[in-house]
Length: 123
Image (tube, rainbow, N blue to C red; front, side, top):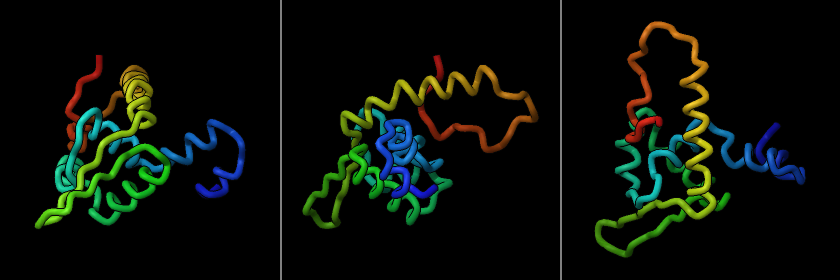
């Protein structure tokens, strides 16, 4: 089911999953947290995402009311992203998801792609 199809339903869970339905949006929320970050800072902190995908995800998140894009008329141009109240309300939920996965994860060989891009610690 595509995002616009989910939005047609009057279902809170469907709408929530539509707003967060990519693997990158929750990570972007956790990286921004309660601060303002420039696009370049986001790109460096989430270095496994292409700039095009990051741009597309941020645009969708702005349309869904999760992030605020603040543009400054400077040379060179500067854009900062921060979370809206709706975006900030996701942080405790995402932290709980991290704790849930940590508690029930299947132990296997250590991956070189551990989630070291997020600069917070669980509990």
